[in-house]
Length: 422
Image 1 (cartoon, one colour):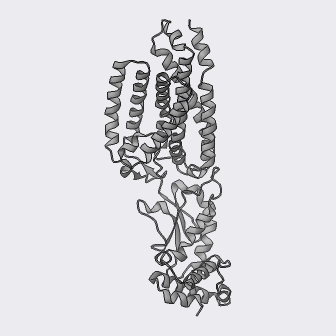
Image 2: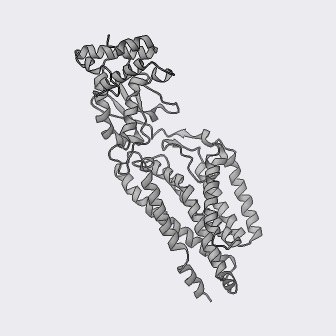
Image 3: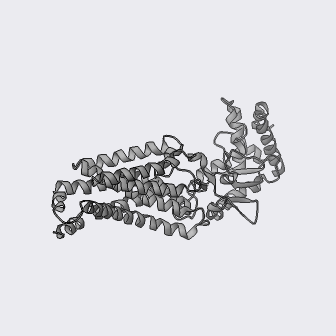
């Protein structure tokens, strides 16, 4: 009587679950390489973010497997054997879970090879973030098995998957309290952040207890389900009542500065160190152009180095660069040169531009002239940048110094005057 069990598992949902997780996992990695490229913590965090989709798929796979067995009468067939009633259910759940894990890890292994080539920081306990994320596939499959056992209809698998996706979205993003940390989905904080001590262990305990509870309910082991449910609640309480996102702290190793050794200083956080060789040649010419001009930045730095603050424009002679979306899948080059250009434009626009609700068109013209001079390009508007270029370089720099002084004071009449190159 044991042969039917082996045949059913061989032809079951597990191979499909592996292929589905491999395909969807690979697609998720391909569409958002900036979230994980070049950073181990980014890769682990992106796996957690991807669980909103991947857990939904595991729920659907578990529900399909359990419902399939019910529809084919396997429960009654296996119930006539000497095996305990829960054993075939656990075997089916484990087959789907392991297959989904294999597919997921295969997809992320390819990304790990790319990250390993260029990563400049491997600390921060990212492996615990990754391990808890993989563990989350198991309660997802168990929940699917429970749903499939209760409602053995084909349509229940996609419905359960969609419901899981929506539920995880609500639980994760509804608020930032500790309750959101009951979700295995990463809340989207940057790779330079660390959760409170013990969070990973609590999350792992919660997911394990939840898995046991769901399987016990599916196998109709009421006493075991009650005990495991109590254990799950006991582990969940300190997570739900914790600090949540407010407990995040900066990883000191990740934000150690890594700087250029020649030319105007350009510094990035150690976790973004792989970007420095591509970043410096684009930033240093601009710093060279404004070197020695009063009010102009003398260095550029990764905004992550500001710690918990909100980086703005140039301050304390530093131009802050937002590099979170610059990595590519291979870690070579920069993904968003337009955004980097926007960071550089802070030299021109940061102080007064956003305080002018409805500025005179002549003020816009002055900003356009200043930006064109900074980047040595034509202005977007018909400004008199050509006239500025007819001046000596010292006179051009004096004009730009006067422009920066006017923007610091938000002196509109002076800005208009400068736009007329008087």
